[in-house]
Length: 341
Image 1 (cartoon, helix red, strand yellow):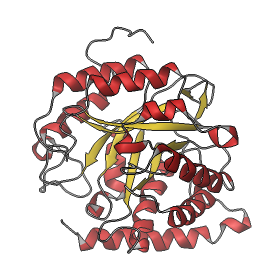
Image 2 (spheres, one colour; image 1 turned 180 degrees about the vertical axis):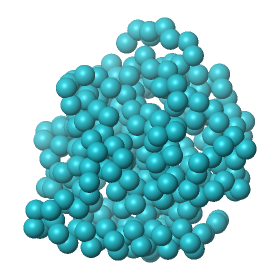
Image 3 (cartoon, helix red, strand yellow; image 1 turned 90 degrees about the horizontal axis):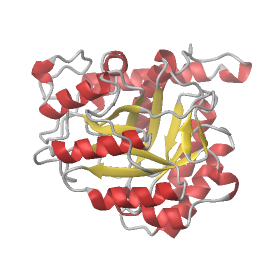
């Protein structure tokens, strides 16, 4: 995996500068000049994501790759390019938790890269998903992390919390208990920004969640995540999503792509188009994986791409070219015929 000292240094510098600004918050001074995001403060109304006026909306954007392996793209210029040129409503900061060099062993690096993305979102007017990019539960560490993030940034409407990326071996009862704890932690500082809750088996078992959703105060302004890779996850998963939607479960596709679940192999455009039509019909938000330069189909950039952008066609891999075009076209499917709900 590539590590880029210059960009990592920039991340650390950003962290220390932002830490300096935070010291003034207690005196009532805002640390960042804020530009409102496109749809204002988001909320969940009757199972649907809505804007500040109560109108249904769907967000479209991309996910950065794991911060511990691709920190070079966690910089302001690259983020502004994705927002302004690619037309991303939302950018997901995939903060790695378990692997070597990730948050559990290198917390300062994770914080600095995340702070860079959050600051860019607030200053440039787009939404940011703070993604706890983990496959196992780490309750105490997650509680500490989200307490700090919600305390520092919870008053900005740009923030969306994804509290458990992809549970793998945990049951829904275990994930649910964990989620309720983290939701209560976040709500101590941030009463209303969106929270995304994962489902078991890489966010595939959404039908189990639909039969036993979170209730009570913790259910306010949350959505449940679904992840798909179109060449692996087809109609069987859409049927589970239909079942969940039929029970008015609020959903958000926080990671998706067109190839196999491994992130590699050929792009299945036919199955991707079926998913895109499905998401359009049900006004589901989607975030595509990923802004990285790994030698795999789902990584959108080549190793020769600059860290900061802009990226012309010569440094975009086929998936990157396709996703950029879909975002610039507003995420609307090629064929649009309403599917019955």
